[in-house]
Image (cartoon, rainbow, N blue to C red; front, side):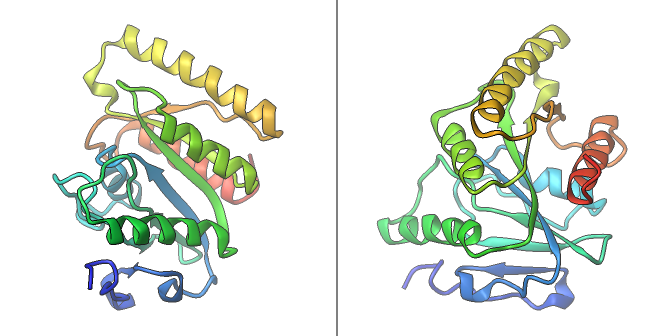
Amino acid sequence: MTQVAKGKKRQKSQGYIAAASAKQFPSPSRREIAFAGRSNVGKSTLINALSKRRNLARTSKTPGKTRLVFFYETERADLYFVDLPGYGYAKASRDELTSFSRVTDDYFKSGRPIGVVLLLIDIRRGFGDLDLQMLDYLCHFNIAWQVVLTKADKLSRQAIVKAEREAMAMIEKYADQYGHKAYAPISVAAGPSPRDLAVQSLERRIYNIVDGIE
């Protein structure tokens, strides 16, 4: 039996629930902000920054290690942060990879109260094929999305501006094609702090989207 097959729901008192299948998802009583992206793109560190809790989401140096969906409690009682398994790196058996794909697919198809999905893109790499497939997926299911460019501190200011311009062009292309609202990308540093202006700007943006203000 694989690690995924043995995954168990964590106790709510620990601040999160880990699910290996749709049967282990919590009741859909809260709105959800989901985090998607390639393995090691910085989802866990961004969750920690937005939640203002340094070790809420555990980080891993091994790409593709996490194949569970994590539901994290936030400072707002009506919201979960949802960390989806990273994609694009496979250090797992064929059975584990099948389960990995299924649990992510189940999340989007199970009628969850998703307010917005943050699609994290390494600013140095730009959009890859899997990222574009995720955009197609989100647009197909009419789910609001916000692109976050991570590891911006690894580039010069000039390179950041160029990357943001290219990302915005891709965002507008998909938004126009599917009739979605195009939100400008927000760039954050690797290992961002809750005090970072970019993190605060992102926090305002996603809460406004969830609350129907934007």
